[in-house]
Image 1 (spheres, chains in turn yellow, orange):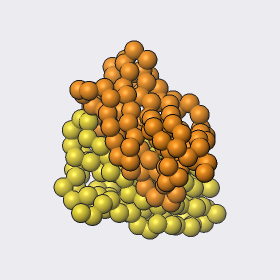
Image 2 (tube, rainbow over the protein chains, first blue to last red):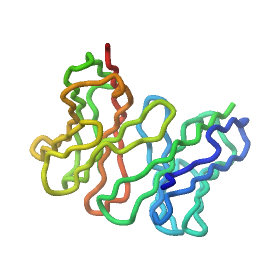
Image 3 (cartoon, chains in turn yellow, purple):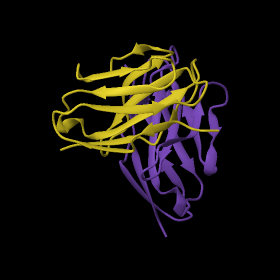
Image 4 (tube, one colour):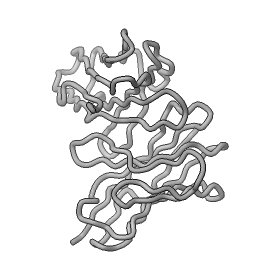
Length: 114
Length: 114
C-alpha cells in the first residue's frame, strides 16, 4: 500500500517568506507526527496529532511554527517569517493509535532558507 | 525526561565483520525501543522494535537487538556486514506510559569497507 508522502521534496525560500509543507499519512493512521532533522542530528520532535487535534505541540520552537490537520488525514506544517536557522529536513510520520506502535516515515521535505 | 545516547557517531567495519551499534537510554521506566535505518535521501525505515516479551528481537536484513534493563541498553548487531548495510542508524525510545512521542539519538553512520 501507499506509504507516507510529503510535498514538496525540496523547497528553497528567501528569509522572511512563508512556507507550507504537506504530509499525506498512511490511510487509517490516526496519529501523525512532525519532526525536524538537521544535518548530522537525529529527528527532533515538533508536534503530534491525534485525529484533528494537536495532542502535543511542545516541540514547536516558537510561534512562527504552526501545524493543522483539519480533517484528520492530511497535515500542513506552516512556517512564518522563515529564518536561515529553519533550514532542515522536515519529516512526517504516521502510526496507529496506542502504545508501542512504530511510526512510518515519509521521505521528508528539505527546506533551505537563503 | 527521556534521552537516548548513541556512542560512536561513525562506525566502520569490514565486509563480513560483526556490526555493533550502541544505544543507551535514560528513563525511570523501561520505554519501548526502536531502531531505524536511513539510506541517503530516503525516509527512516524501521529495522526492529522491542515492546514486551522476549528481550532479543530480530529485525529485517539480518539485524537483531537485545534489551538489557540492567544496563539500560538496546544495542544493534549483525553477524556479518554487507556493503548494502552502509547507512545512518537511529535508536529511538517511546515512553511506555503514553507511547506517543519518539525520542531519537543523534545517529550512527555505518561505513562498510570492501
